[in-house]
Length: 400
Image (cartoon, rainbow, N blue to C red; front, side, top):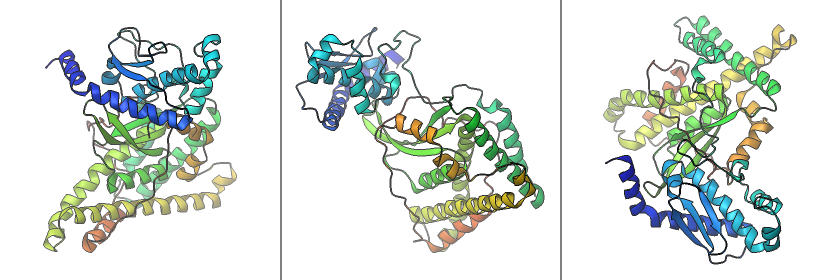
């Protein structure tokens, strides 16, 4: 089936579902604004000139089907909220709607109350064949791997797999110090630059697994990135699926992706090696696997935390500290980065913190084996050349 026919089939199948989803969002937004709802019709349109519109004379909000099908749902949401803002202005500020420009002060006031990202407050977005709505997702350049700093750090991380313990320790320490120094220097030199990005890893699941949850903790604790688990509506299936979003600077995101892919693969491989032993001891199924991987990742997280604390303590005592060199705990540095915090708040309108879950040791032998594997696991082996990098996709986000 060709692309256009597939689009037409999806429109026929899910058009009513899209309207229902947008209707729920419309009601929720008016409720949050404490605006009394009036009759509004929502329509899915085919247009070559508009992504969306609000027509006060007929009280219709229209959203382009091409927008829904060709771009992440979050882009559709941004455009839809833009049209809701127009509706609210015409309903509660009729004089302003008549006397102000369409994107004037009252429109901007409603956008502020809705926490709508500035890129969706613009009067025009290109809808030509080669145009696309603005986005905050994905690398701003495809040449991430060509960063000299990243190449140098990855070479050091490769050396950290050396069988010589002193060589491995020295390489690992130097790599950590380089990451720390780079982030401090970048924060001071590029303090006013818009150099943060959001990379999304679709999980294609309805819930967050304990493995993904713990890998996210490792990434945000040790690799200079923020992590957010997201629920994203998929208009092509009419379902919500989970994703893991990484937020930070490009060089940190590239290294975090490297670690994310490695830990996903390595934890599964180590479990497969342990699985026959666990089965021989009566520990089978998902419970044994969860116990093994949970304790493996928790053990690795603890090992990395201890190593960072020791390196920071050693550096404070060294002569290098007197010369102005610094070492910071990645988590502390990221959480104290107010510019990054502002970027996150701007892109996630309904951000909520979720309680931290811990592992269950209902398979005691597998739990113990997982802890031991985590203590031995060297996170710094680089991924083999040619491994898939499909975890990174483009799209705008901001949905809770």
